[in-house]
Image (cartoon, rainbow, N blue to C red; front, side, top):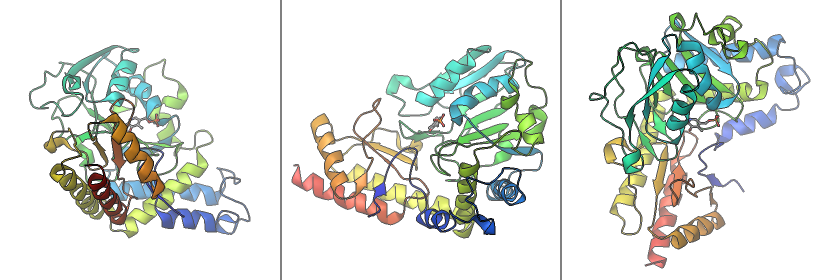
Length: 357
Ligand SMILES: *Cc1c(COP(=O)(O)O)cnc(C)c1O
């Protein structure tokens, strides 16, 4: 039986995509081989990488003067790649709105002056600092943000308007809502939240920013090199890119990012409305900044939280345990989580509340 999987990442993928991958696993595109066995220089495989890039461009409306590359090492490796490609003046601004934002900031400190210009840790990352009131550093090479905070369940409702290029970690929300790529210098995202199995990371970067990486930047982390080689500088994460391509095709069939955003907003509203109207459950994020992808909630009792997670699992609602930094529960309701999954969760929450008054 397929469960409803609320994991934060790796996470649920569209059933049609899994089915398709299963169907063609032994014989990919008439090659008589699986996609994991084929050379990455084979025409049939190169066509996948090209199609995936084209779909990313189309779905996010990426301007031509931006590269779209598929790289390895997860979003965490990009925490280093960002300063290594961009930090010419040896200073950059960071807005620390959660655990991953903090890690990116810490990594930035290895390469230069990483200035923390905003920080919402005073209220356990339940809000985003007002981006219009921050003290942006003159001459900074970039401003780094984490657009959606996976662990704490918050997201930017508006983005900084800064002089320096804006660099955004969109790992847990890429393709979930429309964004104006032109407003960013770099957008990057590990795939395993909203796009594909783990192993591939997308980087979308304005080409004129990436022509001059720092001399110490490893070749593999040079976005320019990856761009010039069509993401095939070395052996790419072949299976993950293949799966990403299937998910992107599926997203296009479903109407694209705007259609998905409408569904995501509907799913999130159902869940937040229920939580706000219940006596048992509480979400602590300021409503303006609530994520439509990751929804943490608590009952106020660790014991009851543990019971909730265990009982939910018994009825096929799995991976609801919150991150250890927050406790309680977290429902990640990425693109691939159907509305029915959210409704099933709410029904369970109702029943659990009645039984545990
Ligand atoms: C999961 C996550 C990461 C870390 O991704 P890895 O691929 O494990 O390195 C970074 N940033 C955000 C926002 C995430 O959700």
